[in-house]
Amino acid sequence: MAQPAEQSRTKDLYGLQWNRYRIVRPEEDQATLQLKTGLEPADFAGKLVLDGGCGMGRYARQAAGWGADVVGLDISEAVRAAYDTTAPVRARVQVVKADLLRIPLPDNTFDICYSIGVIDHTPDPRQAFLNLAQCVRPGGLMAVWVYQRQSPVVERIMHVHRGIARNLPVRVVETLSRWSVPIGGLKRRLSNSRSRLVRKAGLGLHALTIGVSMHPDPEVRACDTLDWYAPKYVSHHTPEEVESWFEAAGFTNIHDPTVGHTHFHPGQGQGVHRVGIKK
Image 1 (cartoon, rainbow, N blue to C red):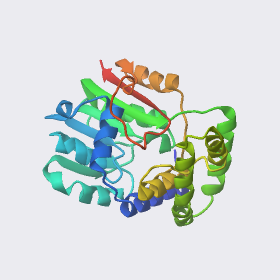
Image 2 (cartoon, one colour):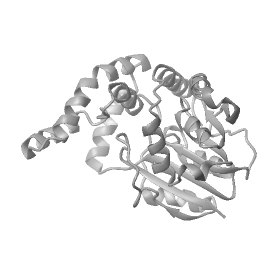
Image 3 (cartoon, rainbow, N blue to C red):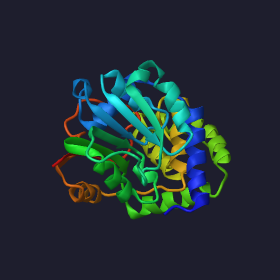
Image 4 (tube, helix red, strand yellow):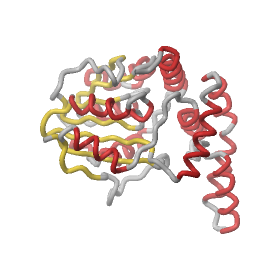
């Protein structure tokens, strides 16, 4: 169980992050939700949906706009931002401040549940997954995205970087994330170069600044970098591990929804995407 100081950092971070970076990019948000769930807009119409870790509410807003009734959960003051973000679809969205390790919702209720980049920021990702899965009705769909485990060398570099950042105050990390925006832009230009030599130089820069986002939007770049460096809890997982969670929760037809999917967004990231249907 999380200690009070650790829980406080999590709440402070996401309260600051999602109230400061209230970024709604409708086309990208739509593509992201479709990519990570494997669903089309029509699949959401008339469904009861659980957003497990809604942040500032961009995906809840998207799902509700497609005709779903959505319950969004978040542990932090991000619920204030989510309430504002979902104002255009207010009648279809309820935002609840709650911990994914203690979900105050009934079992076997939701048609669709998704959790995009959230449970890997909890003290117990597997339990957070199982708690969300318990809320899904038989025949319902569950979709998750978590950070993917990398090679031992890359994991070591990330561990060192994050070890430094998580000992700094959240607001200091946020300032550094904003200062890193030009670096992310340079990384993006180098990686897209036609010159093999320039691309190799870009790989070297990436190794030194592995968590600095290359998203084309500078505001999203700062937000993503903050999200990568600042959390107290960050876990990386293998596809097999995530699939074992689905199996333990009684899901079938477990697969990667991105295989053969035509939707794309620039902030896809390296992660494990899995969806399943509850028996």
